[in-house]
Image (cartoon, rainbow, N blue to C red; front, side, top):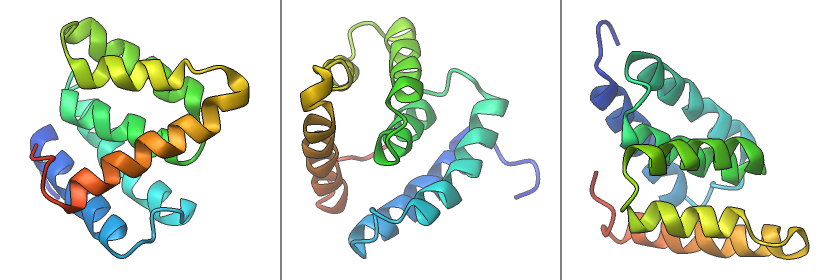
Length: 122
C-alpha cells in the first residue's frame, strides 16, 4: 500500500486478524506472523498509534512473546494511563509464571470472541 497511514495499515491488519479468528485459525503462528509486518509498518509511521500497539501486543501474546507484549502494553499505559483494557491486559501479562499461559489464553479467547461478535470497533 503506497503512502498508507498508520490508521490504514492498522485497518488492514485488523481485518486480516478478524478473518483469521472467524476461520478459527488463530493458533497458526504463520498467520499471526503474516499480519505483524503491517503493524510494524504502522508503528514505524506512528509509534504511538494505540490501536496498532494494542493489536501488536495481542499478536505477541498469541505467539507467547509475553515480555515484548508487556513492553507494548506499558507504552500504551504511558500514553493513556486511564485505559481500563490496557490495565487488564497488563495484569494478565503479569500473572504468576505458573498461571501465565492459562490466564493469557483465557484473556485472548475473550478478546477473540468480542472481535467476532462485533464488540471491538477500532
